[in-house]
Amino acid sequence: TCALPIYTDGNGLSALAYDPTNKVQSMSQTQAAGDAEAQINGLTVKSATNTIKSIDGITFTLGKPTSLSVSVSITRDTATIAKTISNFADAYSKLITMIKTQTAYDASTKTAATLQGDGTATSLETQFRSLVGQSSNASSIYKTLSDVGLSIQDDGTLSVDSNKLQAALSSNPDDVKKLFANSDDTNANNDGISQRFRALGDQVLGIDGLDR
Image (cartoon, rainbow, N blue to C red; front, side, top):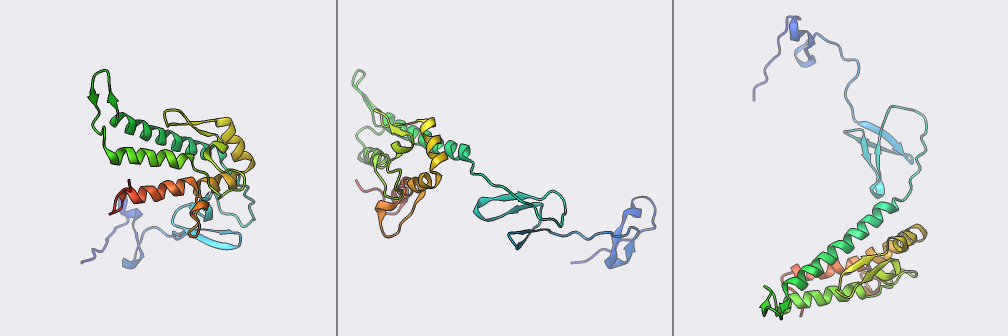
């Protein structure tokens, strides 16, 4: 590669030139660029931007320099958690409805859907419906999805009791988390419901496929 030197006569735009390497300093540097820096609980952290990501998914946006201590109060965003759980219920319901539609048989028109009679599809639906009805020992308070407001309907879909879900999140958020996300490598009975869905998904997409 070849570096091209910058020449300036100090007129026009060249008056803005600044290249100390080639001794071009029409302007003077008052402060060198640097990373943003802060101390969080005594630990120094740096970032190329004013946004610093800390532990537990917490993001800090730095406003202005200060040498004073700043107290930060963090509260659990139960509304967002409730929305995520509701989205799970909605996605599950759409999946079950899709499988039922694709495996249906219309007796009045004697028309079979594309996957009618397909053992893999019906087995998948059965295992999904079994999962949402299972209990978990992850939490001592909430054992099933219905305990936190997610109820299985006659058609296999899930409905959400928003008041019951919000009450659970407000009073025992850690136990709601355990019900969904707990993982126990030694005892599958202590796995959360979403962990069981992940395990089934890995099995379905794995090399050996789905067990019927």
